[in-house]
Length: 156
Image 1 (cartoon, one colour):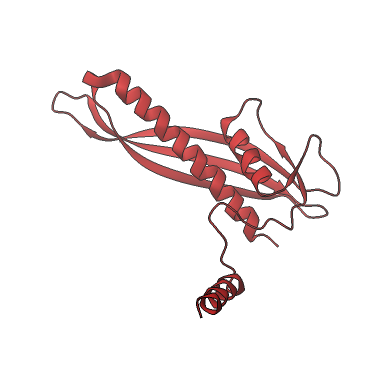
Image 2: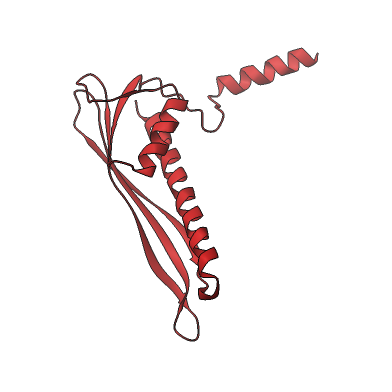
């Protein structure tokens, strides 16, 4: 009876299209060329996610393979609040990503998105806050790479 219940659950989950998080089917992309700035952290994370999904990474663009070009990834800060003495107490971090996907025999498609985080600053703990900012930026880059993979998974 347990085996029958387990088999029923597995067939229902596979039938509805459920996939474990981070393991998206990218069967429409057997190979892809990723073009970006040298030493880009977002590019490194994106290529790592593509390799996890069994997508071959091409070292040079080919006519029969898609090309993903990372145009820019920038971090902006906007002041949200101030201390009584006029120093900034809280920032809003805005991480902007722009990229272009060129499919074979199709016009390039341009994508952009923004991710937001609030960041509280404390001038008395400058070293700890600098480390916290680095961790927030790393988290934003990971979320951006995951979002790009999800967008690629939705393309037909």
